[in-house]
Image (cartoon, rainbow, N blue to C red; front, side, top):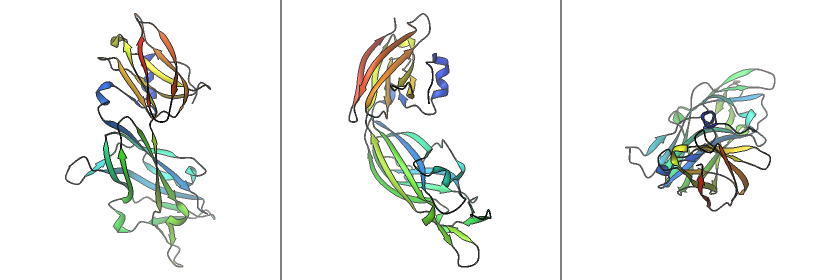
Length: 264
């Protein structure tokens, strides 16, 4: 995505894909993103009804240990649109550091299969899966690290034909792939009241992260940034300095501190 630099009020539109946290969030939290992808099958379409994602957070005692995540995308998803390296962000959350044991993918009843001849048939989901499909993760979440969990839905293995009846069952076969992205950028804005919009840009001028600094402390933290060299732009409004730019090198293992950015 290529964007020209925006004044702060326009940054609200960026929050759907950014990972910027203020100092009050820096005391032991990790970012968790759940993505869906597909190993293709020999069908015209495999439509699954995604209604929710839950995680089993071993740090919280809410009676069951299961925590419902805020969904970014839900509803009918054609898995065949997510093959060949494509994926979709299902859910995203800021979580306390600690261990998560399982993910539960919850599917609704509106699952269908489109055969190569164009015929659409219902996919029957076994009643035992009504509470959700449990997937093992067993991941220790560390502070200031972004975890990308990919749910690789094998469409070919998940569709089971019921004899010669023309009916099909959906028995999801999913593997989980977890990647920890430890790189990030932090710093402090002076004065805090300037509260600029912050963008992280690649050499090709692609925006990969953004957000705002804390209005009280001026602190900012952008997590989940892969290793590389980036241009970080800070944009404020009068009476503060309108714009400042830093070149920042990020490694895979550390949060890079850019220090104090003066917008006086």
